[in-house]
Length: 356
Image (spheres, rainbow, N blue to C red):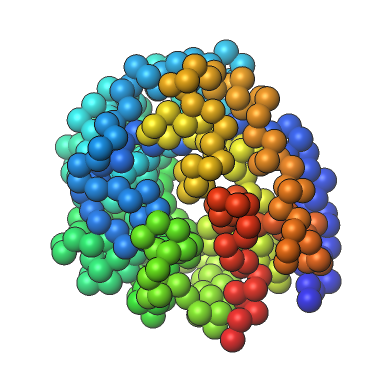
């Protein structure tokens, strides 16, 4: 049952949320520039590997997407997030970034930090880099276990420390919380603070890709509630800016563990171009929900303006457990990445909060 405080807050937020859905302004574009990766993460949803059968998307193929956006939108208001795989395996990443910068787009990377040396960081900054997200999934062996490569932790924390200390970019550290790292949350918090890191996002693993059949990755209901309480407590302390990721309606934790009330922004403010040319939304969403493909002649902004209906009207999700849910008005069927090929909900965050 929602508390009165949470219900009032959620009700007051609805007009603004409905307005964003109606206007659907593109503010973030993810580019899956490669499927190659130098790690072998237990939770990878893309099944990335050192060498991929699918070649990296050439810069010349992606630039028409930006030209399409720039014809209709102020490029300074659209953040290009370069992801993968691991974007730093691309030798031409600086060339890509410079092309974005010259067109007026701010850009950033999501990285595992293994290749982010001081020299590479400087060259990226000189190419207009404005944001960096580094993944740290535990301390020492816990991180290495999650990432599948011994010694990966040291490079990740060094990269995060360097980025935070530079004062040159917006940044955060992201942590996918599993059963092992859950026990280390307080230690991870202190580690980040000691290294001058001021922004931390926590996620939980959803069961797709390699994570679908790995019970060590999924928190129990008790652990999930414990994670929410940890975030609330840490936010009250005010020593590090921490939040839960964007996924999932969280009932009485809404407004307490992140800076806004839940809205799946996929296809509403977030778009993506995947390595195979698919025009999609959040990169975590399965390929079934792609809306077009640049290699089939689709213009990005034409797709953005005239498709994405399933992202902006979730009425089709109101089946099975969602059909009778009292919180549908606020949840709208959960995140799109939690829908299977048949449109059915993989799992519900609210139910997990209620599990024993």
